[in-house]
Length: 244
Image (cartoon, rainbow, N blue to C red):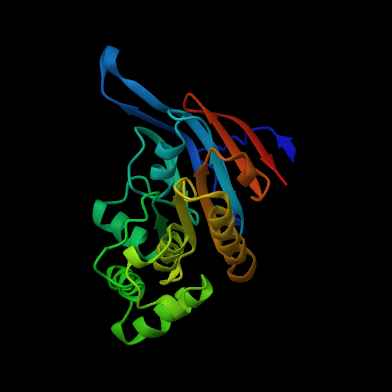
């Protein structure tokens, strides 16, 4: 991988047209005074469309906090987030929620599947939340499950699936409404190496065949060799950027 200097963006300059997402001098502080915790300290980054990007770093480095900022799950204390050129930092909670449901897909380390729902029902539930018309639910859900190789098991519930199958169901739910951007927090942390590689293959296929942009957090060195770009975080700073 070629090591690059961290990009610095002028907050007043227009966003580059090929950037789906960028952060400009983003900080996040929890608490006040002597007890304040500075999780992010003036982070700048730009994510090009159609790339598989990793945020790496040790626990406490700020990578999950940054992912939450990029996924509109939290707001910066200072700085700005741009999605497809639009400054989304100061949008109302209602508008941010709509963007999160329609433009983004979110995958959590714990899978977050509804245990009494089948794989199909979990994916269909995500489509309802995204506001997709009911007439398209069957088509969209089956396509998403087929993409991750789980259409034959669409009637199975989470407790009837392996960890890898549960994570792929979570991916199907996250992509069924066809978002521009997929964000995943440690998506392979609970999986063994074989199942982790299966999940990463799905991500690569989404980027290469669907043109999706994916950002994930990880501390797995093997994943660094698979992704297109890596941002390394330490103490709330981006200390290195590399790309293949």
